[in-house]
Length: 640
Figure: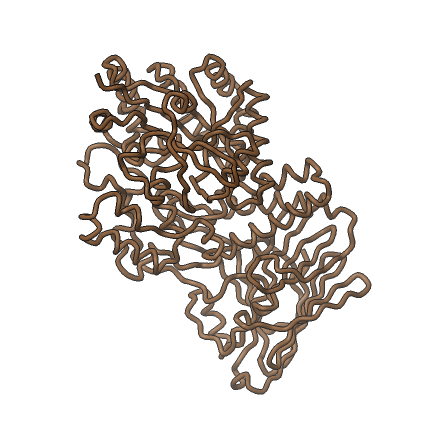
């Protein structure tokens, strides 16, 4: 008789740092409470659950009864817990020490709260790099779940995916469990009969293991799923189906740890850098993402089969740092403060705030808003401000030249007890970070209006098709299946947004066109590589940037005010209607004093994809100050 398929049913529950309290509450009511009810009513045990640190923090404060119920099932062996980085970071985006600290902190939290020695890991966004086994092993992790795609791109054939594998780095070994992609798209979006057929196919082919570990928010939090899963009775049918399969000895529910004990792993296997299929596509620049979509639709690929399909890939997750300067600034300032914290002896309170600033959601963008959501970015900048405020308390103005954003060119980092500022001379001397430590606001934290693959430059058909597109229409669509199109292309920016983005324009009327993104500059200073010098005086640090008859002096004062003075050679700046402008993209209000002749303001709005379609989001306010180009000089004071 054929052995039953061991089914490991895993759920990842998470809400990001900075999300609204109402969102936490809505998901408690529509997802987390119904899930426990459904598992209890259906006897769907054992099940594997990961609760992220930010969500667990909120639940402990606002719904401790839910945590107590979870703990009771853990104590009885009905729920197996998975760890992760406590604050739900992308682990590969952290230093080795930070990875170990994040995972260790989460394991210790689960031990204190639930008495569980957790040895398995939920890998956030399933972002893998080859050196992770070393740091996971150092943090006490024995096994990790990844997409089956990770093994397929390593050359593992389809018929070898349904069992554990081992991988290693520098002698540190961890076991790898592959998430069945088919299950990821069947549960909970398709009728349970299709799930039963899939289990039957696995059993007929002597596959002994089926692993599902995916977002619990699919069970009521994604659009349309609350009705399908709970009101229309999908979860009840799912539990009943599993019971029938268990009674027939076709399927047995298993913890992941028990599955590894029962099924000796193969190996070693060496996994390349990978994430799930959609993430790799989202990380591509728009033009390449559209090209990949066309390749995926090609008849040759559809005939090639799943083994060949896995070899057609998108980009590395870290490419989001290239795609979005906003993500890179946040990430590199976080890394800088983390290194400074360790050098200062790792004060616990500072470490806590840096850890929270590592929460992944605001660093990238896919089908969820991610980095386009101002409140998520603002929350992480606020955590960094709290960390910096404690480390810089009582310190005077300081300055250093350092390649903080790792682009091969030095920036100028200015710090004091009241601010952290980053000036980029090689991008026209703009201020790309101006973190006010008193309020926790990065005044430069706005979002550039980037081109995205789903913008209507050309047909975007197929950009979000899933492996389930050939199925019958019964069921409810996944987010990846929801079709949304824009009729018109939103405005795009010529250069990344910052404070003090300087231009020479043909007239003030051209300056007013900045809102449309269609203006043409006589000279775009932000694209120029300026030389810089630094002068330190009594209570003031001046960063002077020069190039081709242009000089810009930015004075940072110990009262946290900034005074900027420009000088340029009027000759060669076109005719008498030409204007010199500086644009400040502001996340909060500031006081501006100066001798400009015209001030233009407009809202900075982005149009980006979200789980519900497209969101028009106010990112901040742009202030454009104009002087006649013939004047040859300008002055501005900035005060909070």
